[in-house]
Length: 41
Image 1 (cartoon, rainbow, N blue to C red):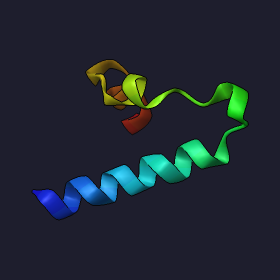
Image 2 (cartoon, rainbow, N blue to C red):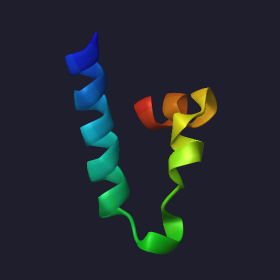
Image 3 (tube, rainbow, N blue to C red):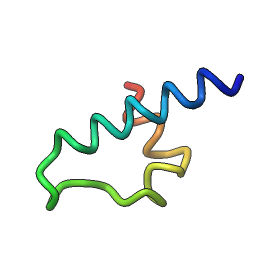
């Protein structure tokens, strides 16, 4: 559902903000199924 998607996205944004910029995946990489399953792990 939409609210859950927005919440997941904000969690990903926070996660990305916590990384040094050199290690941040770009947005396109986060959208792919491969890395989203890795993040969820």
